[in-house]
Image (cartoon, rainbow, N blue to C red; front, top):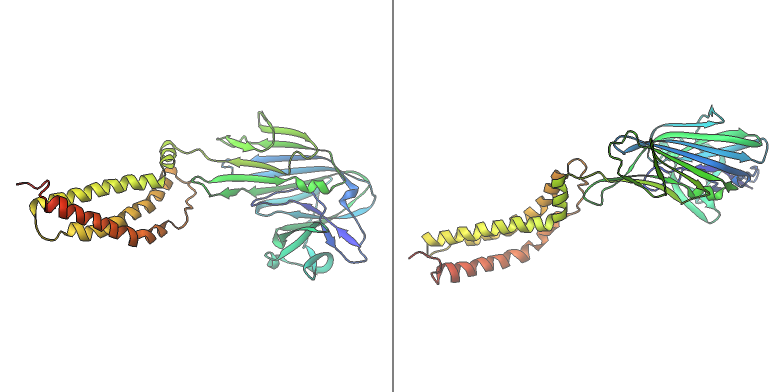
Length: 359
């Protein structure tokens, strides 16, 4: 026989949540229970955004109807990257969280085993089956487990917690996101609808996006949906960039480095010319020694241009630019070419031809 649990929260880089019915291979004596016998009449999701968008308070209410009397329901909540204040109520009564009773059989974790895992096992991965051939892996330390008795009829399950946002550093400016999974609701007997409420009263910059059609209200945004409107509710925020930072991002590190390098080349060639004005003959260190140094300085300017843009952006700079120092791999190729140009200018333009040389 199979023991089935309810999974609250499926996560992608941040905290996601919802009820579901993952499949566990249980003991033969386990009484079967499936969320196919429980209907979600309505889910009310309140997301209260903090002032910097980097955290949010979640308040989720599931209004459910159970068609079986005297059912002991194991509930499992998956809360990756939740920050604090994780609490659960069933019919307005607080529910105690207990250690997750998982056993191991081959490559599957079984529900209903007497072995209880502790927080020391938080990095162990658990295989959770949404269906017989559909599974995902989750960390034990991110699973919150409790058991409640439900009578036939209507009940309310409420979950609250504070969540950290995900942070995308792939661009110049950090972008923050909160995501909430709705797809697990597909495994219920029925899903009546979703009432989404976003409280952004603490936000000074309300220029964030929501992937669902919502309307603006006094406290933030609101949307009411019949059935599942999407697999996820996604809130995304990109802090505004100051004028200087915006301009330097548009210019980019390559053009910044080219502009600074051009100034450096002009200074170098001018110094070579002035030297030949005073020393028409002989070897010039400005050609050979400085000529070897200038390409390295130009490459260094390219690396420093990233830091310049980050400094202009400020604390919201992503500051993830990869291995920019690898540009020095081109030094063995660029340096000889630049020395050749310097030698030709010095030999045939500044010295041998007497061009620009004072008589």
